[in-house]
Length: 98
Image 1 (cartoon, rainbow, N blue to C red):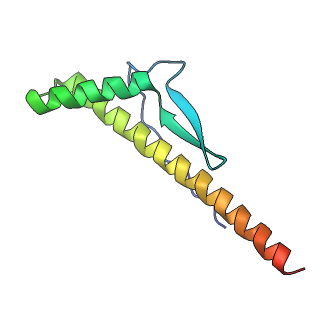
Image 2: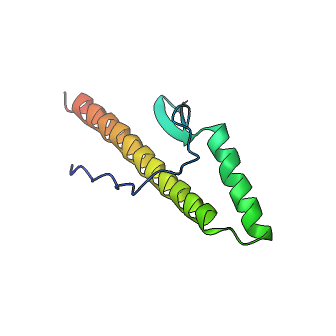
């Protein structure tokens, strides 16, 4: 199995908290990385404002950075999920070969 390269983030939003920006949840024993409630609230505020008004350039850039982080976490979650599935298949295959 080829290990995919993690996407490189250009920068982080200035409003991203240094601590508590990401939370980890377990789904069927697999760790899933999600944006914290505080980060989600900020993203929702930007999206809400964007629907009513035009965001200023700093807000547009901030929203773009959050989108990059979301893509990064999605990639990481897919990779971790696939890794667990590959290991599970390998264990089943080895058990049936005995």
